[in-house]
Amino acid sequence: MGPAPPPSETRRAELAEFLKHRRSLVSPEYVGLERNGRRRTPGLRREEVAQLAGVGVSWYTWLEQRRDIKPSAQVLDALARTLRLDAGERAHLFHLARVELPLPAGDYPREAPPELRAVVDALVPNPAYLIGPRTDVLAWNSAAARVLGEPQAAPDGRPNLLWWLFARDEPRSEQTHETARNTLARFRAEHARRIGDPDFAALIDALEAASADFRAWWPRHEVLTEQLGTKTIDHPELGTLLLHHLQSVPTSHPDLRLTQFAPADDATRATLQAMTDPG
Image 1 (cartoon, rainbow, N blue to C red):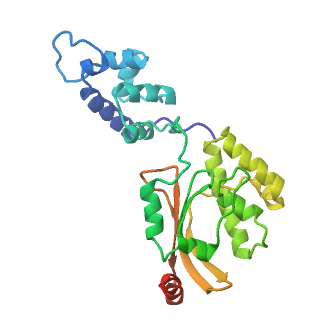
Image 2: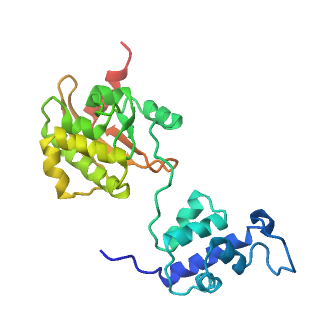
Image 3: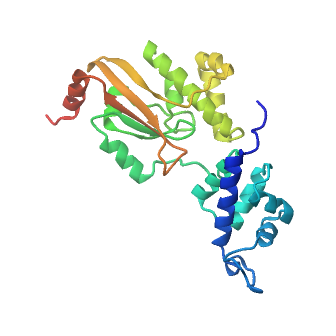
């Protein structure tokens, strides 16, 4: 697949207007410039933005003139810093320019944010859990423990969904087999965004040593980013459960994935409710 094309005329227009507007909101004093001379418009001049971002004045002017050019990620980052864009505004800038948004320099969450942990727990009697990019389990409510079991820890000591699905001791059902394959395909999509991350590499090495299925499936490069469907679980104590399942991205923490289950029939709804009723 070749590089993405330059932004369309409509996107170039939106990009130009966005840059002009954000430029008008940054005062010269805020970025360490003296307010010399009479200014016809508030905020920074084009040449000042170009100087602060380390780009040519003509090139930056072309952006605001909707020219058919494609800026690099490095240039967009420099403009985002110069124009004091927050994370959402920076992402908007990259989307308008049709440039892949680089991952943040900081590490991804290794523990569940308290608010998301509270949401996972509040979803009982419906099973729910929260995982990180590496499928590390950050929150797993009591209904998930009863219906799905308890996830095992990977060799590094972190409970991990992928490790549990591939390296578990007990035999896997056809349903679990399919869940393992789909989870691996979603993990592959995350891995592509984080090639070189030593924790991802360590988990892959451990799985290759522990699981013949992983060794067979990993080279297939299957990728899956969505999860929405219905599954049947034949539980040894609770009987047959029919569950809708959805994996979603919390907008407050886009590196995390929240998986929720909901009863797909009245019998399953009654079973889940009875499972958590006192007495």
